[in-house]
Length: 315
Ligand SMILES: [Zn+2]
Image 1 (cartoon, protein in one colour):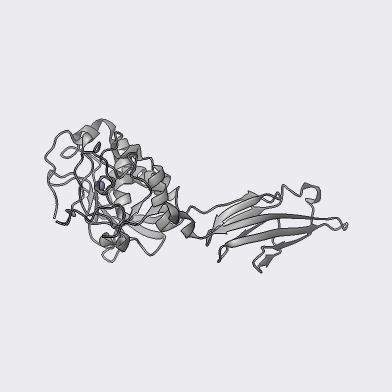
Image 2: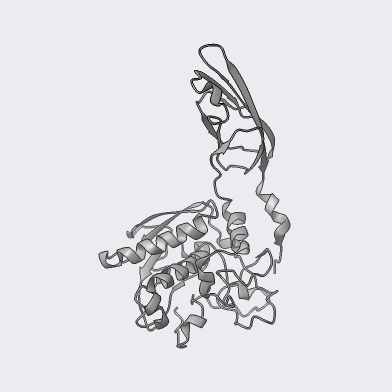
């Protein structure tokens, strides 16, 4: 079922998706937890892949990379032409008088569904204000729709939406609220910036990290400091520049503090299975018998470190 878009002042109106809110107006929220993907790697394909849309498709991919992917451990892959059996998010490109950009449901409700997400690259029939800024519209609308595809509902659907936001609720509600109500969310119709200009707010980032994990941390120097990392995230520890006096070292021995060890040179990449504090040491020696040790402490957090910010609202 698609919803017709009749308003002409479309830039002031956010993007449609067609799962109309249930009659139970108390079930407002933000994230529909039952539709969160059980994987960080989500396949994306295009239903009607056409060479003429290559630049537009690339801009959509880049916008998603610079927003949801850059701020969490979620990874959208593929971006190829859909096949009959394609799983994940299936995007059609359409410019219809009948419907605007939308998803057919939140999160996994569109998993493998043909035309599960609709995007518009030409704006001749819908959102005509975008014709003068097509590329920008492609990007900010994609960020919004991919938010839905991750299971995130409209921010103004939340029960704690203040009176100053009078946009009506739209689409499926969530069942949990993350963080404070956020005017600057890319999922908020009341945001004075259309789709938040495609830039994730603090709440958006907290939301995506909570459900898909924080972005992978990489490449810190071993310098007797301490580092923070989340359970399961890769941490690359580099000692090459902190032990300059033995750059011709022939022997490396890393102890990661959780029983793991490594003899890899210069750096080591490791992820911790359990939260806690770990002491990382490296012992380096060269052919002339000189040696040096360095150490640092790694604090490994579980995702529940984020939970104090979560206001559980289950109805
Ligand atoms: Zn929406």
